Length: 421
DNA sequence: TACCCGTGGGC
DNA sequence: TGCCCAAGGGT
Image 1 (tube, rainbow, N blue to C red):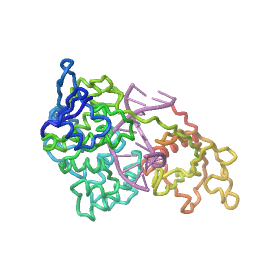
Image 2: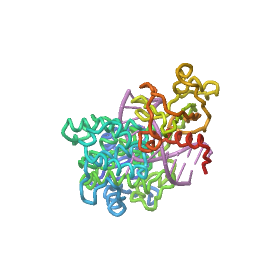
Image 3: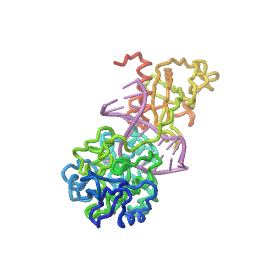
Image 4: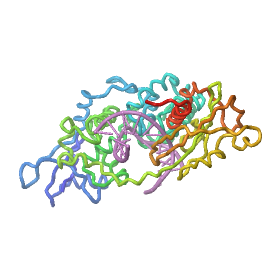
């Protein structure tokens, strides 16, 4: 039976304890953190069979020392020893939600150029923000970011603590802790996927995600009880991110490079890649859509704005009926097309040609889109709900999702007979 | 709690 | 190719 023991204010000490033996300190910690059931596990090689054994420390200063030599240079990160701009931290944290650093960097630079401060962002039209966000995904982040900027102007600045930050749109437990720690030096541990993974391995947490979230957060809060981390909350938080991103990675963790290899229970067990355990996945359903590429001879295309909330909320799209669970038959196309209700009356029936099939995988379903295209001399004046004509050349600069960019590209190529590749 | 909400890269 | 994964939040 292993127990974590508290060894003063500098270290979290993990000792291997022989079954049946427990110390007053280990009981004290357990009481303090409410540990029932499985004991927090840690530690290390025992000298010899028998009594109490070797103990190994999980030292916050070991991680910070590693960080001082191995920290990544990132655009939103302050130089060593300096404090980051809260606006920069906030924007980067929102962009980095479920998004890789590589994907974020170009968006971050462009975003800061277009919206250099909170006030500029707050007074910008939402569509400008969505344009800057187009392609990044999770568009509610952009909408919340915009709302949040307006709240911040109203408040006169950022709340300086976790509780205050939590009241803002788009800022949850993780992001509030991250901003508080990184920008304001509040000694909290932001628990993201990296920290969950590190914690699950350090303590060999057997319970699977997402059920183990609360347990992992409680254990992660043990990581910064030392003096060193409390003195450098910003560096400590970012050190955890860097450790998770470069050493304690999901597939092949580089344990030999890890400043915490000694106290890591998963490492001791030789089971590093088994943690964090995850609940079995559910099957991803398939949906089918049809979208229409209506072009005119002056190089325009009919676009439409999606409803402001929900899937791809507020982004632009090619018109088409709602997606459904079975594929669309050719015979149904005519009545679903733009201006279908007017074709029998004022418009000549449009000659819709199939121009491609696009597959797109969302987090929770796979979508197949049948594309149909037609060319008219001049686009009819659409009613409000039917959309608006846009220059094809402008599509790259408008707020289209990646799915819709793919549809436009595929449809245009198919219509004009291009052969990709 | 369990869903919903994007996208691109790595293996 | 298919699956996994990424500095999660809202409802």
